[in-house]
Length: 227
Image 1 (cartoon, rainbow, N blue to C red):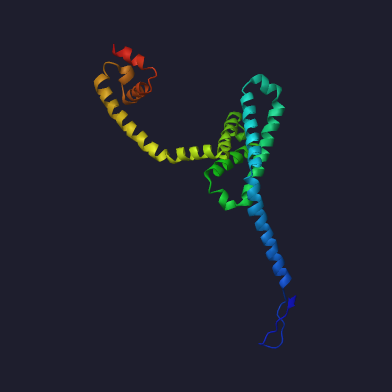
Image 2: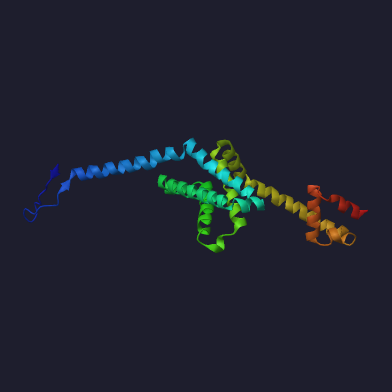
């Protein structure tokens, strides 16, 4: 239905026509876009089958990286391993783009998504920038994607989140332990520096000797030096 209004100021000049169908059609298109991006895409990304598919590809890629540590297998199946790396990277890029379509601002609120984005970005750039194509470093990044698999399991994701949240408290404890070791290292240099210089000759050596005693790894050598 078309609606026409006439101006009451300056004569009978016509105003532009307003088509109600265009307004409703635009609103319907927006509703469809909102439904697809929020409802359908959300269900697709969080569906167990899709998450299992991504996790399976990541684990297969990690297994192939482990197999590449054998020079013979790497030389024999180099083409297969390279194809698997490329396929997995393509799948992760598609997953990244789908998550952006689902909610670009929402994507950056999750720390795991940021880590995953940086890994995928570096691996993607390494395809075109030879300076970044360092095999050892790229394999480390590919293995780090296993942490993404942990996020698919609610129990593991919750455990990792608790560990990350406890880092500030753990840092406080580490500072306290370091302070105690520093005090006893000064005592060790003062008391034993002239007798056992190889273990307490300076502050750095004394700290290392105390660390060995705490971990109980090689402390017998220090004990024998006292004898």
